Image 1 (tube, rainbow, N blue to C red):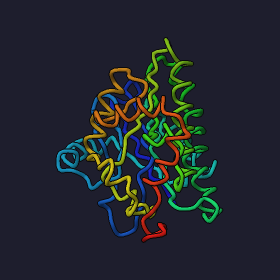
Image 2 (image 1 turned 90 degrees about the vertical axis):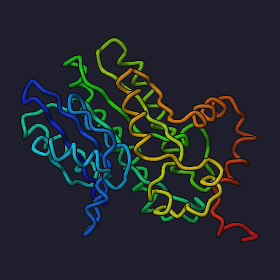
Image 3 (image 1 turned 60 degrees about the vertical axis):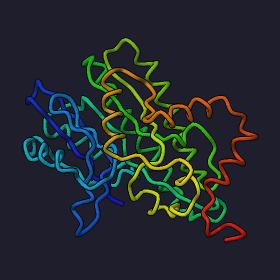
Image 4 (image 1 turned 180 degrees about the vertical axis):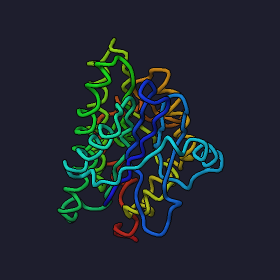
Length: 278
């Protein structure tokens, strides 16, 4: 799957350049190109796949000359290299990076497609690590910029029936918190955004729309997640969990014993079609 990396630059060589991965390319449907909050002075934060809201569409029309896209399969090392190469060839430096690219899988791990499982690991884990490593040193050297990795509330717990996806988000959460500490005092912001379920087509695409977790937690609007994520990122918060219910859930998940938590998660995550009484 080709992922669209949107690059926004403002102010020429002395301005700031921002990259946001994870805009899924779908033929014949340009509406799927997604943006979160775009701040003209600092960053283009694309943290959710959604139809473009009118206010963001208007903003993009004003800054379209400062935007360009790179289509690449980020699940491959060559894809990540092509994003870095595009930035260098434009004479730019990546001041802000939003690692949003990723996808989920739902169902029994033992029955999952091995190729798709490898692609999930490559995109959710390897690509995020690779891109962070490519752009973070430059930020540190310039003593400015930031890295925002998109994880999930899923990263705080094991997730039976979405095992690989939950594990990938636990990796993102752990890596980002560690990098935030390593870059303390460098002038670079490093943070992880960990939303609960968001109202996009993500759940349907991975086959999890019938699972009980959606009814149990509800869905946040993608625009709300983007705004909260951006505001808290710019304020220097390391772990950003949008929504009071999700904040309380994250706090509980950090201390709850997995012997209790994991069976409960299994009941929420198992697709209804796979239940014995379905």
